[in-house]
Image (cartoon, rainbow, N blue to C red):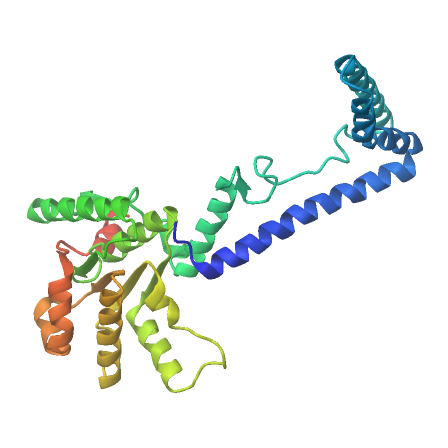
Length: 322
């Protein structure tokens, strides 16, 4: 898996702290019991000496060792039962001083048998939603909620193909092979919905996704170029390093020589690094050819699989259905 490195560092540190806090809280509860119930303190001291007692028995020789160990275990069992009874009588739960982990499987370490536990994977996935910029969208816009009933006739056939293709794209995404998509179509035809759906599916697989508008991406590059960001802050590295960059609304940005140059460098850098990209735009092929240089359009139509969205504005249809 290729989790966002900053997210991984933060989540790993949180798990380390979580494990330590659980143990410290258990120690505080144990200290409370020892202060209020001295007999529990005596039992705990006896139980904690079990290891030393077993070692002493082992030094006496192998003969009869199994029986001596059995008697120790039996004694410990009686002590534990006495401890539970004392706690019950005092109104405490039997496991009051036990360490209570949020995840009992990995004991809040994030790993189980050398493999990442599902609880840590879930935390990283949620962090991925947040850092990708798609958290708000994916709740309503995913493959499950994409409704093909808004398309009819030839548009329905076309969108069924695009839906199936984008779903296969997300399911087969492995971060090792560059696969670029260009979504073209007017507003309200499902480009943002399927972009969000892909983002969710790819993040769920553990990959680092950034979903951002073209305007915001160019603004971040401009701010860095002209020194308008705090010292040491890097706003643009993620656009170059993430496993999948989704650029929404290309063509809505204020066009200038800088934005055109920025777009070329971004696309070219990701192609060279063999990192996947999805670009969504409301303007058609001819407008793209007019607005952007041949260096850009040759890459858009040469290195990207074009998905032409057709149909009637879904937002308008939804208003009419209400």
